[in-house]
Image 1 (cartoon, rainbow, N blue to C red):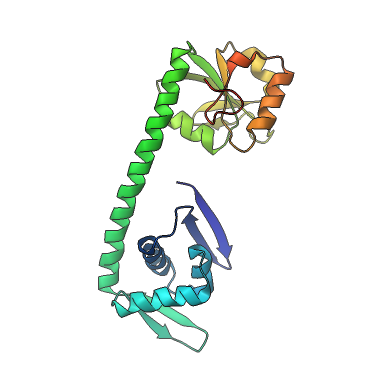
Image 2 (image 1 turned 90 degrees about the vertical axis):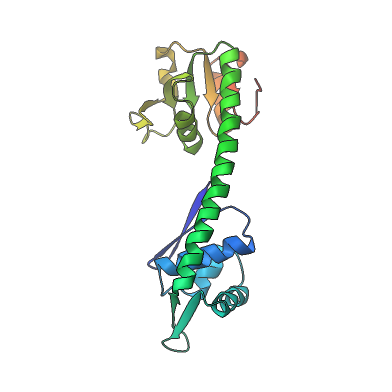
Amino acid sequence: MIIQQVNKGSVLLEYSFYKATPLYKELLILNLIEKNKNITQRQMSDVLASSVAMTNNYLNEIEKRGLLEREYISTKEVIYHITDEGRKRRKYLSIVYLNESQKMYDGAKEELLKFVEQIKEKGFKKILLYGAGEVAEIFLNAIKGEVEVLAVIDDDESKQGKELVNILIISKNEIINYEYDGILISSYSHQKLINQKIKEMDIPNEKIMTFFGVPYDL
């Protein structure tokens, strides 16, 4: 699950890219109010990707069902209170959400492990990752014990010399110091640029891999 963060004054709102179904919007609203009872409808609408008017409709419906109460401090200031029934509902929706998320995670991990098997079938036992971002971190956590990752390459000098999941981050100039079977491009947004840099180092195409199928499939 990818989480985006939006700062609204002193409020930090978190939300995912999942399609906002009615159940999910209900959970989001209850979660947001639980975290900040002074949250505004504008802030909620930003998270829900809905208009303020539509967000107010959602709030009216949830209030009718006895899940929250509104305390009007002034015409512009409202404090939201989740009722006992609302807390029960929020916990139930959270469990359902976690269950669905776990199914998605298991499916994604299975796909990743199949890819690892393809790497092993090619005889690649020692590899380098190129790109020290989210993809590399997920990959490293998922393949522990399956394939040996010698190092993670990244062009960002501020990352070089540090570690990602206990694996050293190096510059592309340090590749020559490693005996590796292949280089896995572990970046989605920069894969074409990374591929070009690898080509400029005269590394054979058959040693270049990417999970996203561009430029080379296994």
